[in-house]
Length: 493
Ligand SMILES: NC(=O)c1ccc[n+]([C@@H]2O[C@H](COP(=O)([O-])OP(=O)(O)OC[C@H]3O[C@@H](n4cnc5c(N)ncnc54)[C@H](OP(=O)(O)O)[C@@H]3O)[C@@H](O)[C@H]2O)c1
Image 1 (tube, protein in one colour):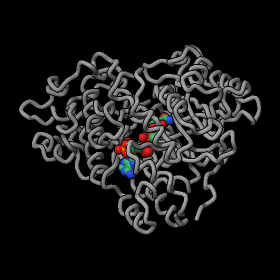
Image 2 (cartoon, protein in one colour):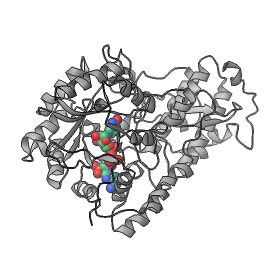
Image 3 (cartoon, helix red, strand yellow):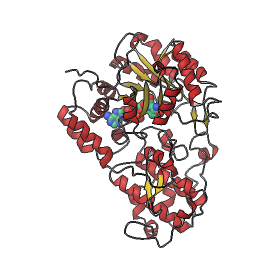
Image 4 (cartoon, helix red, strand yellow):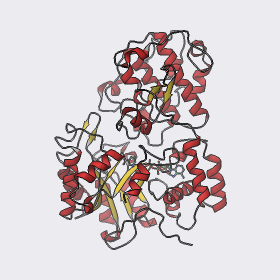
């Protein structure tokens, strides 16, 4: 049984073949080598994927994998017009500037590195940038360059990644005609994050924009033993498929095109075998429910913590009250097998009474801030060292690391480094011999295990909760009070 494509919009290669699941060539492939070396491992992975039947390859200027894709294209005998190649302009982020002087240069570089005379889909990797990042281009001007490239035939289709509704609206307005509207929006999508920003999936689909899902397997690769586990297991048994296939099929049935990746042949093969079964509407609805029944993201109530703290000095006991509240929220999430993965001051707000902390996500933060908040996968100042070693990091351990960074910030009113990246000398110099939180609790070892670079040695939230120093910290909860009168409300006007 072969189902007709459940995608909300279907692309076709130049030779007219339907475009399906993409092979991702994201940054995980370049972790253990110099960024400019060609990874033969990745070239082989792409060739294997092509042999197994993948025809859609996803790369980006920022991944530095265009050369590997080009190498694989040289070696394969699959005609170029049967393939769909997506790549992306990197406008820079955080303290990193755009790699290319202009979007046009980025397109020309992509053509040259890929060794092709046209790109099927060219995206802006993220709309969260300033003109300083891009050496002088705003979103509209970047779009103009993409429109120009489409007119010249350098790219067949143009789109965006990580865009929220206001960005898409700006791109519609910046397009000379509907023919040049964005055709795709590549965002993080899986049952635990069904809208990377407010209403983005529905809006994109309503406007004929294909939503592409990165990290569609996050419930398997990033969360252990989660609220979805039983459902996935049952569906896998029912359809004689793997849990990953259920997730990919679910993504397709939401009208969304998955971008997935694996270093393993059997998993690559499995990813393509998702067109011979169909989940029932009830089953898709059941997975959709996860988003609303698991209270991972609570709605925002107040401006986020970094704004509130801008003019407020916190006493140490108050810091611990707030921080322990944060820990209790994380204990709740982790006890349900869920990780937040993007814990940062911007994702922490107070309730209306300014007494209890709430942990929120991008979408809710957007609503609270009245505009899109910055953030892709994780956040630049908070990323744990293992984030750069493997994309398959332990989300719970990275949450603990972020909690350590937040505690450091609350204590010092600054971050330990500008950017958690090997380019930042403070981050690079940091090693286990330096305990950034050592002053906090003399006599207890536990805080040295929070900002612990070795993920194996890092404390877990339940171990922290059992520690005698930690247990002795008073904090405000539904049933008790830390004894302080929090005055944070006074600085919010
Ligand atoms: N536009 C953006 O901002 C953006 C951001 C991130 C990613 N992306 C793109 O999206 C692509 C995919 O992202 P992703 O890596 O997060 O996607 P994903 O497909 O959700 O996850 C892939 C990871 O899951 C593992 N995996 C595969 N099958 C599995 C299974 N059956 N059970 C458990 N784990 C499994 C793989 O490890 P093994 O190798 O061990 O199988 C791999 O590390 C990237 O390569 C990139 O092209 C785009």
